[in-house]
Image 1 (cartoon, rainbow, N blue to C red):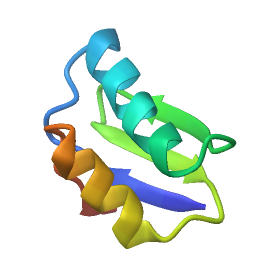
Image 2 (cartoon, rainbow, N blue to C red):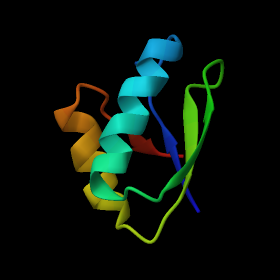
Image 3 (cartoon, helix red, strand yellow):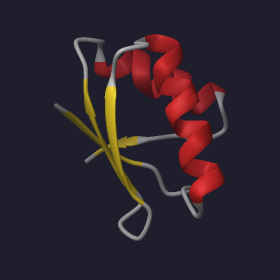
Length: 65
């Protein structure tokens, strides 16, 4: 499980964009998003840095939570 804080998450559209970016790295990743906490948890075998790079490229820079 990888937990990330993504300060730019503000709405469901943001979550959809974040999910798309993560699924670009791991199509089978399971994602739980908490908009109020601006946090996502990702069940994946992908590398944390790969996820963070994909999110930054999508305009949603992330920090390790």
